[in-house]
Figure 1: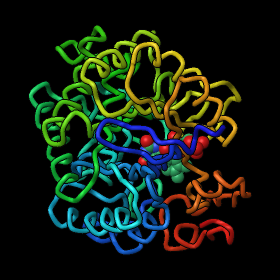
Figure 2: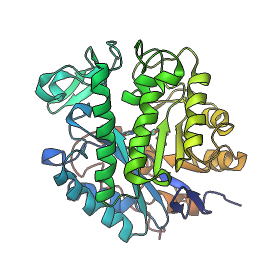
Figure 3: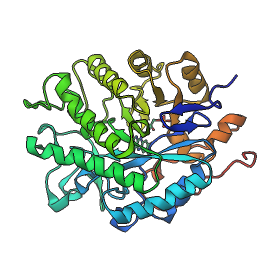
Length: 364
Ligand SMILES: Cc1cc2nc3c(=O)[nH]c(=O)nc-3n(C[C@H](O)[C@H](O)[C@H](O)COP(=O)(O)O)c2cc1C
C-alpha cells in the first residue's frame, strides 16, 4: 500500500497526499522584486488537490538578498503580486506556504542596498556565487552584525510573516537551511560571537528560535514550519558537533509545537547529489521532534515510500523533479515516466524551462 497518497496533517494544514513541492529559487520576478503573471502560471501548474507547495525562498528585506530576481516580501506591492499566486493555488485545491529568507553572508555589495557589505554573525567569508542583476558574483567578506542590529532583522522576519498572511499564504517556513543567515548563527564554523547570540548552542540557536517566534506571533504556531540542513556543507558551512547542534534545535522546535520540521538530507549539497546514502538526518531528528517531519534531498518514489514506511518522515519534498514535472504527484501516483530537467534554465530567464514543461497525457 502506498503511503505517499494518504492524508496527513502538518499543524493547521491538511495534506491530501504527501508529495510536497520543495522551495525552489527560480529568479523570474518582475520589477520591484514583485511576483508576476509568469510566476502565477508556474505555481498554478504545480498546484494539486490537497498538495502542499513551499514557495521559492523569499527575502524579508533588501539586505536579505543574494540572488537578483528573487521575489520579495518586504513591501505592499509584493503582497498584491503574491495574492494572485495564492488565489491560483487555492482555486486548484492546493495549499502554499512562503519560505522566508535572509541570505546573510551569501551575497555581494552589488546586490546589497547602497553597495554595502553583506552581514553575518561573524566576519568570515563563504565560497561560492550569488547573482547580481548583471550576472554571477563571488561572495564577499561580510561585516559582523552589531548586537543592537539583530532585533530589527528578527522583526523583519515577523513583518514578512504578517505580509505572507495578508497575501493569502497558508503558512510560512523559516529558511534555516543551506548556510543562510539563521544557519550561520546556528553552526559554530560561522558563528564566533562572544555575546548572547554566540558561544554555546543555547546562544547560537537564539536567532533561529526568535525568528520562529516572530513568525508565530504573526501567523500562529500551527502555521509555521522550519527548514534545517543538518551537516549540510553548502555555503562553506561546518559545525564541530552537528548532532548536538541540530538535536538541540529540533528539541526546542518540538517544545514550541510548530506545524512541521523540514529536513534536508546531507547527501545533497545545494542542488547536487554528493553521496548515495540512506536518509540519516530525519532518523536522528525523529527521536527528538514528534510533530510532522518533511524529508527532502535526493528522493525518488521508492525512496519516498521507504522513508514514510520507516516512520522517520511524514511527507517528502521533491525539488528538481517538480521543476520538470508540473503534474509530479499524479505521475508518481500513476507510475508514469518523469521528464528530465534542464539545469541551464534553473535560475533566471523566461517561460522556457519554467512553464513549458509538459503535463503527461494520462495525468488527470
Ligand atoms: C533550482 C533550485 C533552486 C533551489 N532553491 C531553494 C530555495 O529557494 N530554498 C531552499 O530551501 N532550497 C532550495 N533548493 C533546494 C531544494 O529545495 C531541494 O532541497 C534540493 O533540490 C534537493 O531535493 P531534490 O533532490 O528533490 O531536487 C533549490 C534547488 C534547486 C535545484
